[in-house]
Image 1 (cartoon, rainbow, N blue to C red):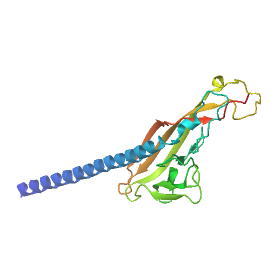
Image 2 (cartoon, one colour):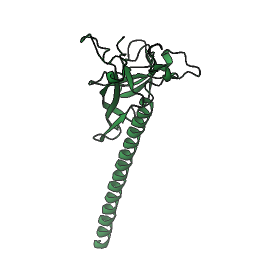
Image 3 (spheres, rainbow, N blue to C red):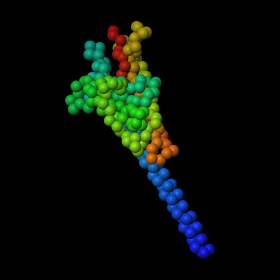
Image 4 (cartoon, rainbow, N blue to C red):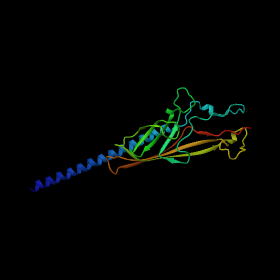
Length: 226
């Protein structure tokens, strides 16, 4: 009887250890899956954001140095949402996808990412009328809230301006209220922060942050006439 009782206790102890071990393994796998899904979302957004402002005829926006030459053309894909110095739970940008550049940002050349607070899903913009997300945009789910429920998305846009007035033929701004003088080159970067959890594992939450520099600087303003 004693041997039988001892055997049953031993089996019960081993069984409890096995159950606890399997639970820990499931939790570790869930953590790894959650972290991998967050990294995949951030990598996708970062790769797309780096294209922001791409223009198939960017040479038209460069000063030639000849006073008689036409003024540089504005980049039709310029702009980034949120504005410089601001944060938001969505991002909007544009870039050219034209095989032959048509010098305008079409509906299918506006992109972005937003958090749907109702479903907890991240949604990707596939078409829109402007850089800033708005009514009439087309969105598709990027994540499955049954497996990844996003609770927070914060995107912050920072920009540094480089004054280009010294490179102008007339390096003087006569109107102090002119927002386009002096001309400036904006160096932009975006900080991304996402927090999410696995609805199948209560209490399991992870967050991930990333900061990236946009490849295409933005030109604002023009040299003063003279």
